[in-house]
Length: 197
Image 1: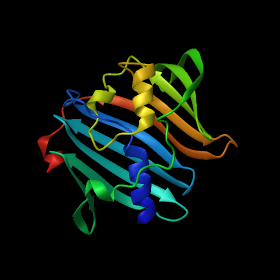
Image 2: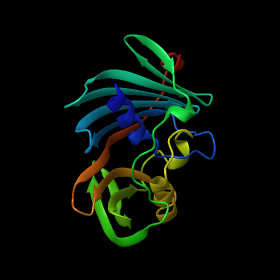
Image 3: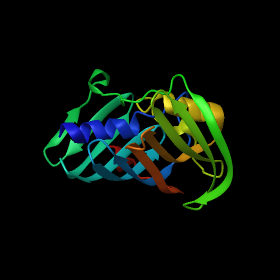
């Protein structure tokens, strides 16, 4: 369970909200933690600043299904055993920090999962991140909840304002994968209020 919690917050402690989002819909993405060898397939519902993230995890140390509900500044984990509140102090931050960084490269347009993206390669300490940013999504970093924040996504917003990170790949300079996340699709649609109960 500890590894699932770590993966959860590694994935989603990456965005900072400055205002309540206006996006309503569903996002499907896949995430991999290179350290714990865990993969998550995630379906994310979003409406009026409320978020429900449903995880299907698999890996060498843990597997299972659970959801995270974020609303009104509170975070809950929901699984077959019930619900548990997660205090902000209990969230483990990723082991990589991009507060101080160097832009190594910016490449032209490439299609990635039907998004036209620009690739940014940045370096911080012993880590290198490849970030594929798209303008043509209906979703923006400002739509994500406050609990999902990191220095890397602040950098992404500075480099490519108004865009969304369709893919993130973070590696050590040795080439070892630390983390990756790829958005398969973003679907604006009506989401029932019952999703966030």
